[in-house]
Amino acid sequence: MFSKNSQALALAAIATAIWGVSFSLMKYSLEFYGALALLALRFSLAALIAFAYLAVKKEKITGQEWRAGGIAGIVLFLAFATQTYGQALISPSQSAFITGLYIIFVPIMAAGIARKLPDSKTAIAVIFGLAGLWLLTGGIAGAGTGEELTFLCAIGFAAHIIVLSRYPAVSALRMTAVQIAAVALLSSAAAALFEGGNIPVHPSALAAIAALSLFATLFAYFAQTFAQQIISAEKIAMIFISEPVFAYLFSWLMLGEMLGGTQVAGCALILAGMAAAQLAGFKKKNKPIKLQ
Image (tube, rainbow, N blue to C red):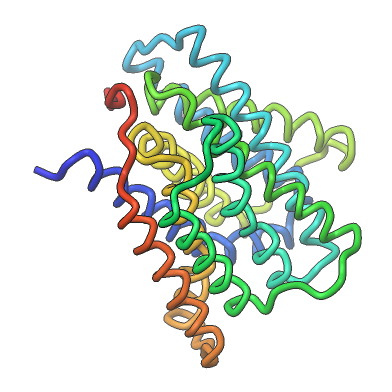
């Protein structure tokens, strides 16, 4: 049997790979829908499936799970919204790099809550990851509205990781359902306000949206919520930083895109940072998660 640590690590890595691959699905779907409408469709379908399953299993969401999931969902929506609008103004590589800055914000936020500095191995892991991300994406050039919005998005994703790390004694599935539903409601309201609220059906995009809902949303955020019952926020951030590595790997395998020496070196540094993070050890949470 695999240990809880191994399960958490594997699920976090799988979720990261899915998010890396899903970039092309998001890009394709945005040809048919506005950014907020796409988020509304993606998260609404995932929420419907999650709540339908909970209804069949007769699972009751607790007050703590409503509160924690609601907070996590609000933070996640703000992160997605600022990232989406920022992406429209800057290049994908700049967006990837600035978003990846959450690997700095997560240990800073965690240290502020714990009132102690991160350990040296975690700091080294962050440095390796940040350097690798710079080489892989090319860093940034200048700062404007797009960069500022994406910077806020990085803070948002870091805050989401921190929020999930603060609630170890909840059901992963119920917590996931609530936070996904919160994003769906906020995205739908924002789409109605800023994009007219008309969300037509485009058969050509249905498969992509279904994949985004089932895998990149429902499964991936369940995997993150599960993993954060066992792995500390700092370690989960170092796993998630490998998302662009998976994106580049997918482009190489499926699209024939070749990586240059700088990009390969960036991938190697990110993986080295992940290894350093694991050497720093896992921090177990108070209680194991309930899988039922």
